Image (cartoon, rainbow, N blue to C red; front, side):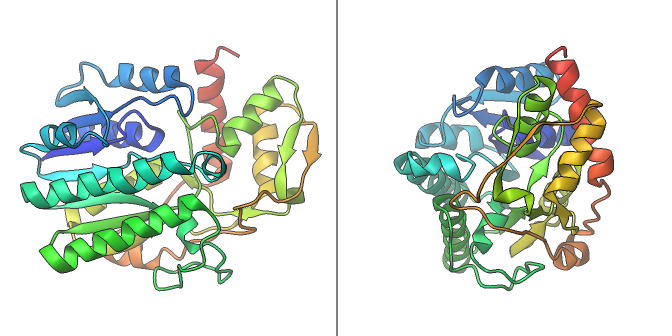
Length: 315
């Protein structure tokens, strides 16, 4: 298949591109390599993809409709991962979130309609569950109590995709990712921040007084769900992609300490606005319809990240 992958220089996008190319797909990557976080990390990911059979890259923005249209020409599927991610950055930059995550999504979705692309797979988020405290979170649960602009953006994406399916028959699959981690991860994510602080003898800022719980999901497991969604290409679906296990934040930190071979200095802080106390995915729907079967626990996944970090930063 020929696949357009937006956000190809991003964390999940990079790993998705690697797997698709390994199995022989043709991948057109589209990314503006924004400075939202260290662009040298994004450039390094792209460097690893250069020269691989089936890979081509367009440095462009999903806010430019003509760029999106050109990148999509002749594609069999579109994987839309480009977005302004994270919860807290939106507090001071709401206009950017609306532009990229709403208007940008519309450009991709509407171009899929215009070019009659057989299927669109797009990134949603566990953030859509917002203030709903029912655990585990199921795709059928309420998602109308958003705690963050980012969660609202992703819910809007789901509603827009549903409307396009209803009006035009566009095949759309939304994937609600749960706390993704692994090598080449984002510098604003907890695992990167914890590892970086510990290896530089800085205190770890631990929010929620260390009492938070998360469904930490290894990036390779996420990618397996993305690829299964491409191949199944259901007319309209929403899937949770998580590990299906709830881990204590302090156990996650303990795994970082074990992997780094030292104990961290810790500073316990209150919950941050927009955060939830716990997350846990009900992955039964993805298991049934995608054959999704996550395999990596934090005991195995965290050391892989720390190993990558040490190598990449020569520490």
